[in-house]
Length: 327
Image 1 (cartoon, rainbow, N blue to C red):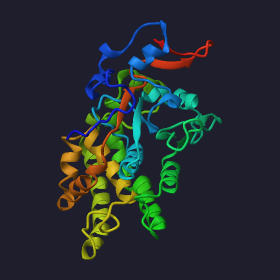
Image 2 (cartoon, helix red, strand yellow; image 1 turned 180 degrees about the horizontal axis):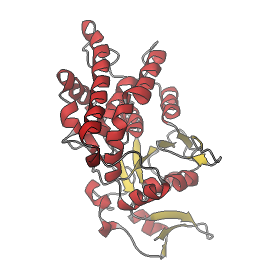
Image 3 (spheres, one colour; image 1 turned 180 degrees about the vertical axis):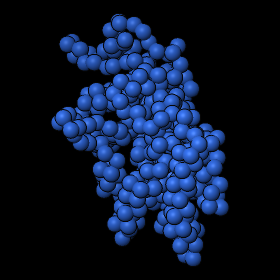
Image 4 (cartoon, rainbow, N blue to C red; image 1 turned 45 degrees about the vertical axis):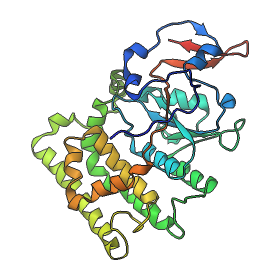
């Protein structure tokens, strides 16, 4: 099912890429010429301080999947849509995440054993309150807390629920999702652009064997563990049937807990719609399909030009004019 894609900052005369076009090589610019600000604007890029609309920019992972899939980033997209905050998406190749985040001043989320900083998505740049002093944040929990505190309308943490929701989300990301990882990570790897796959192979970051090679006993055992987690969670949520609809964690209204769980369902659906999602959506009386449908109205993808797919880096040249370096 398609989702609406709003384009925030190009003028009416500037055609932006359709979602499918952002992966075609015909749109990759291959020139070493430095071009001026006017040419950059015809591509749809306007520096934040020149945007006519203040927005929150959400950085997401570029892949060959037509719709976004990363669960932690979906958590933030759900919040932005639920709170009706104007935002756009910038698409970044996985192997370009660190240089991109360094460039925009995003804080690292941790350190590697050798002391080097770790940079991951999601990241937001919030210019709604100040274009000249935007807020740049990383870490999904930090961003969620910031959005709730800064934009309290339509709260994602109903009064008195924050502790229980924190426990629910911790269970989702530390226990519930674990059996899915050996299935979904190799499938996700296959859907990344080839240059990103090569980068991950060189770095030894690929977890697990290819999905097709995991057959037989290991495949069956993985699915048994996945089904156990879904059954357990369904038994907990069923306790809301007496005073709610039994679909969402808080009984009747969606909340952050539902967004965390539905983000995992979206990951399953996007990387394996015909095998994994086709099974899971029917489990537990169709509960998971109902939850996904309940959250559907908050699944809009507000899109902008692809960032590194166009192989474009914006520089501020010595003449103090915005220019465009194209590789």
